[in-house]
Image 1 (spheres, rainbow, N blue to C red):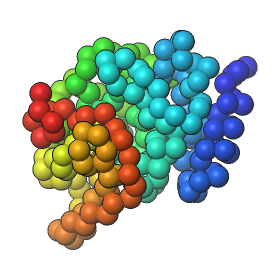
Image 2 (cartoon, rainbow, N blue to C red; image 1 turned 30 degrees about the vertical axis):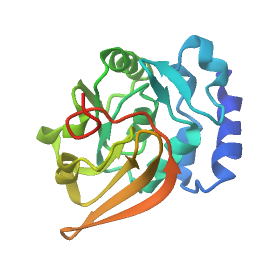
Image 3 (cartoon, helix red, strand yellow; image 1 turned 60 degrees about the vertical axis):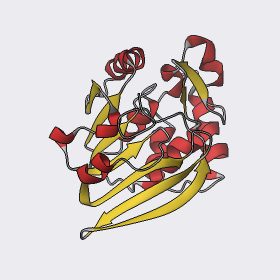
Image 4 (cartoon, rainbow, N blue to C red; image 1 turned 180 degrees about the vertical axis):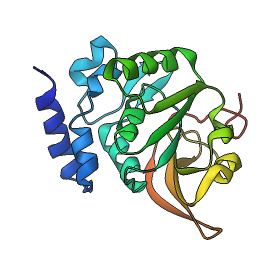
Length: 214
């Protein structure tokens, strides 16, 4: 018996449905993916709370609402190839992998990537490919990608990611200072690029060649 099921159901009802998360497929996935598996044992009792949690190495697992909000903005239908920059705990990756065909995820911190890979294997999430690298340069050899998600805040949208985005395609990223950012949705269609600000957020730094430097 899954002792955390009630926590997930309450999370979906109180944190997601009560706000602006309306994608039923996404809500079903959020009610299913075991978020508690992606945090340290000491944090499991808080895994379904309406807040981010530390995961080590100065990084965090985003609050469930932000995970759902960013995912919903990509309008995934199940057939997409998705690039994620910033694997972190692997929770966002897991949500994406249940809603698309293939996820390619890049992480710069070895300990986090190793931990995430272990959970992916335990949960039998086999449509995820991952690597240790500078995520701001993307993963060009597997592009273009139908959707790209960046889970760290940078000073601008990295040009390599725009280049690796398919046409049509959607890219979501926090952009701003190292203290506060705007969640930006970039849409590419017929050779044109349009950027929309969706919400004010605060993420960890996007570190790399096209981010805040190494």
